[in-house]
Image (cartoon, rainbow, N blue to C red; front, side, top):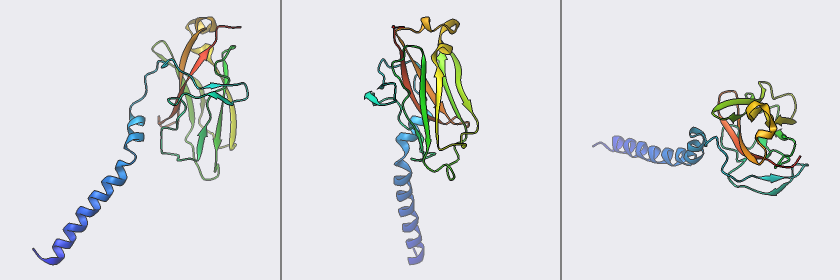
Length: 176
């Protein structure tokens, strides 16, 4: 084997090993993104007050699952959680709105096995900070919040390409 050919082969092997190590670093996040979580709640919530402050955290909820946008897109946990009136808010923050293109935002949940869209906006670039409201009654049979009292629902946040950005559970309390 000629010396030049041997060096080229060694360089190719080194590149392959290095590339697989680098690409392998994101495999856990990529796996999370490929496998959508169960649409049923896990029985835990990220408890928040009426101002959006976290009272107690659920490490399974509201994690940024996609590396597509890096740290430039922040979706804060919904609040208040639990909710009495079925209305929760979420904050969407774009750290660099002039440089980050978030390709739409869609929030969905399930009414039984039916997927329901609670929020849809194909243009989210208008403001670096947005606060939006979601009404949980649309996830209840007959759109009646009474059918969700004492239960939890899971919300999913996607971009318009169907990339799951985050998800979390919301509890509808039994009080009025």
